Length: 343
Ligand SMILES: O=C(O)CCC(=O)C(=O)O
Ligand SMILES: [Fe+2]
Image 1: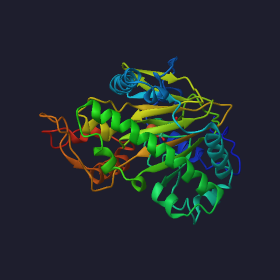
Image 2: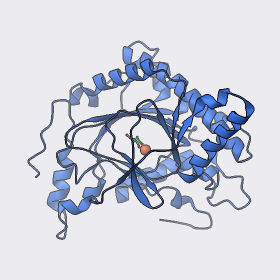
Image 3: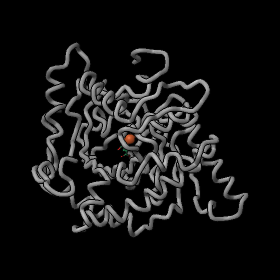
């Protein structure tokens, strides 16, 4: 099996980590057992037509309720009529494909817009289940705004980031208002240049049964807006079970992140999700992460806060520490109230 890892010149050496973990694994666990072989049901995420926000009071209120309900019950939903044109989505995807087609060494050593943003696999993986068969550019929006749009990629990213940021603000306003908070609160915390755009690529994977494209995780932000292609592979936990998200290219997928869960005192759910790979097709997705400045204090205003107050910096540092030690993020349970150290 290990020999079946052919790579194109632009592919990162994703098989290396897998091979070394496979060689060193203790006990008799067969590689097949690293990835649950259970058939995962495909579900359509709640679909919300944002056009309703522009209609009469009744439709607007209905739409707001749908957004809040999906954020409470699923932590995930998809939106149509979101204000980002199909042509812009296509242009962004074309630029994304082009940049991932560059030779691996060039991607690693970019000195311009993408400098320092390239990553692949899970360097800190300590076991086979933590190997991620993907590469990504995780780009701070401040780099995009500072780059002055001199290349097609930077100007397209900038054009894309603006309406996506607006959409993120619109959704957070609705969600904060729904829990009786000042609707501009998150807007004040998350400035345009503290957010990130992440371009993901999942190469086809000869060991798709055994390796995930992106290991199970929650997002460390307030809210994520994802655009995926038609291939499929995103899965999330619903009622304790993994379900596969049916791809719908026209829609954008929205999910609640850890910071919103903490700030809303668990009203909104930051739900675990992962990406599975497949043997035949590569897959692309693009995520916008709504993040605050590092010094921002995350504190619920509930009478009995479930989590203690922390800054976004504290959160990031804890995540990085856990990934280094355990190979994975532990997340919000680290910040539960009245506990010194939680796992
Ligand atoms: O590619 C996807 O569908 C999900 C990506 C994701 O979860 C992430 O980048 O955090
Ligand atoms: Fe994610």
